[in-house]
Length: 149
Image (cartoon, rainbow, N blue to C red; front, side, top):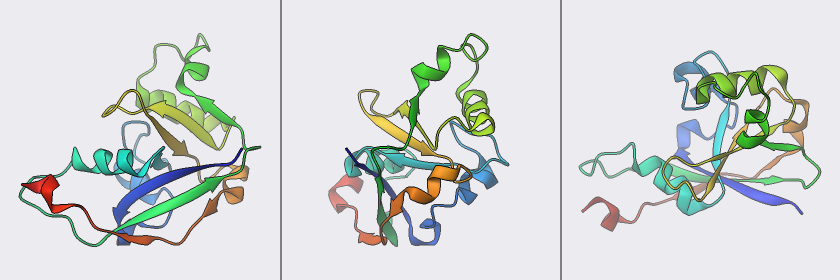
């Protein structure tokens, strides 16, 4: 069954091309590698943003992006990769880089560091199946001001 993944970001970063991760890297990729970070829910996408924000700065100019992933696109999870003896002890960045290089799937499912009971989805925009993911038009997203009191 198809499922949806979500991203909440500034409008200027709405393109799901992995360029932001390419420029600065992330938890799961080194700089110089394209990767798109998404979450299993809008709420998790919001929390993934909040941990990087100050209470003094109320965020504006944000959008929510929804991507629909067809059910026949292969998805690997971090435990799948860690099952490979040569990848077992790698850092998250090195593991993500190895996944990007080997291209076994368009999506890697990983536990959120913010809410470990939930999942983030890492998308490889260079994978042939990436073009089959339906990316919907960004919609304005307004943070509830109570989050910043």
